[in-house]
Image (cartoon, rainbow, N blue to C red; front, side, top):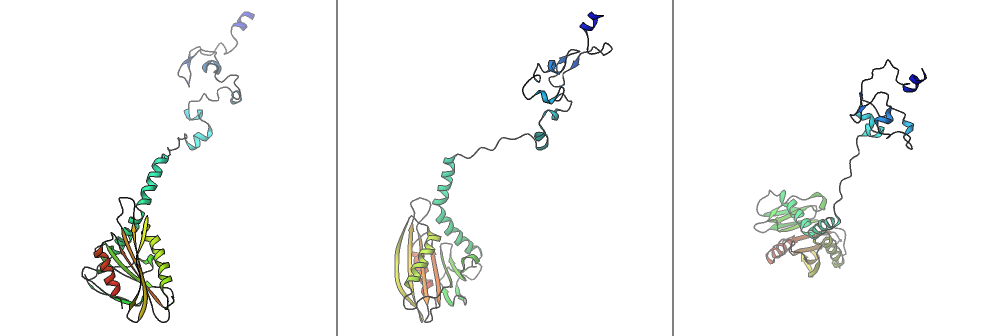
Length: 267
C-alpha cells in the first residue's frame, strides 16, 4: 500500500494516461506533469511571475498571452524615422533662396489669372481717386483683396502697376512717406540680397504734387533674376494721398519704361 502511494498520487488512477499537447509550444506533456514541466520552469519561482498562478497563460486564445493594454490598443508600432537634419537644412535653404521669386510670381500670376478686359483702354479707380490710360499690350486685372489695392494693370505677367488710397501725408514734403512705403514693399516683395536705390525724385500729376522712389534687387542665387520696384505717392492740398506701386520681374529697360509710362498717365 505504501509503495503504491509513493509511486502515484496525482492524477488519480482513473484519469486517462494519454499524452496531452502543450497549448503554447505545441509539444507533448507527459501525464502528471504540471505547467512548470510544460514551460521548462519558465514560470516557476521567478521573481514577479508566480503571482499569475498556474495556467494563467495557458489558454486556447492566443490574445490572452498579451498584456491587457496590447489587447485593447493593439501591438505598439515603432515611431517613424526622423528626416536627417542636413535634408531639413537643404529644404529650408532652397525655399528661402526662392522666396522673392515666389512672392513676386504669385502676385503677378494671381493678378493675371483674373484678367479678361480689353487689351488696352483706361482704368478708372474712384476709390484711389485716379484714372490712367494703358499702353498697348496692357490689360486691366482683377485686384487681389488682401493687398489693399483697388485697381491693377498688367502686361504679359512681367510688369504690374497697382493703385490704392493712401494715408494722409504732408503735401509740402511727401518724401518721408514714400521712403517708408518703399522700404515696406521692398521687404515684402523683393527680399533681395542686394537692394539699390535707382531713382528718388519729386513728381507732379495734374494738380497734385508727389514723390517717387525706385529700387532694384539682385540675388546671389542662380534662380532669381533681378527685380524692379517703384512707389509713387501723389498728395493733394489737403494731404489726401494715392499710392501707386509698380513691379517688374525680371528687371528690364522695356518693363521699366512701361511702368513709368503708366504712372505718368495718371490723372
